[in-house]
Image (tube, rainbow, N blue to C red; front, side, top):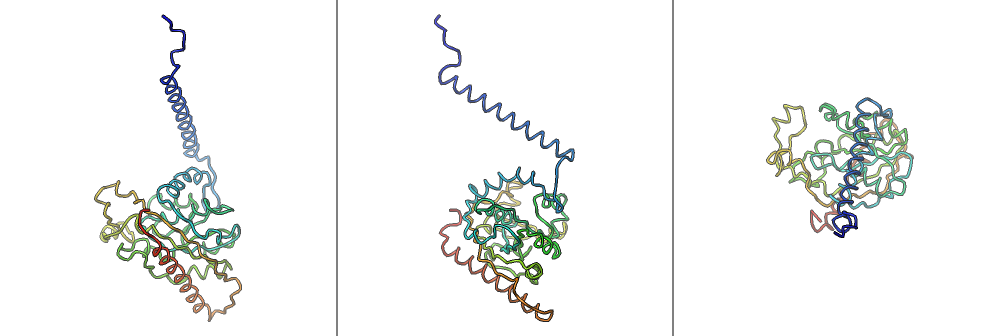
Length: 301
């Protein structure tokens, strides 16, 4: 009957081969990940003395890169101001209800710096009270926001990231977007002075719009011992789907380092110096935010 050619030759055969290749690749990928999960469940993994798990970070980094490159399409400016090695304190504005801003600052340095390095963020103490949250944060290289932790990390020549606005910043109403809240009592400046670490002001635009906070369910927040319980246009209206952040266009500006290692002060003069530097850093961040907003034509592109 002339059936000499193989059955799968031609376009249909090509599609079958491609489908088969994809299937086996997907199967191999799943087997690899299942083996990793099993090994980790058995406790076969390593963490550093702060609890950071580099293997876990490598697993989640593709997600962070997708958000950075494709979802929020982040533009990083001045990343060369971040030192290639040695200690430094990144000080940034905080917003967005969920702390994706910390993740994007870390990813910007990994993506754009000539010498990529991890930045360790300091997370608020209340986050540690949420089941598993503190553990997850530690595994991703974050450390509880205590003054002694900041100084120790800097003395170990780490790149440390702080958000002095704290919960007041990340949980502020959308009507107050890009208006910096009070920078605490200058704890980050004291840490920098003790460790003689340069301070790098970081201004973030775009995070305010990912979860526009139009209300705060204070009774619910109080019930769960949280600083706020956000109400946004999508949450809780859309349930879990409302937790998906909106795809705003981000800009992250890394300012020039403020050197503090040569500043001389006595015990009596420290409060004045701390206040002066705190105000200076806050003003720089606010100024750069305003400059970025002036140039921004649209929230989403």
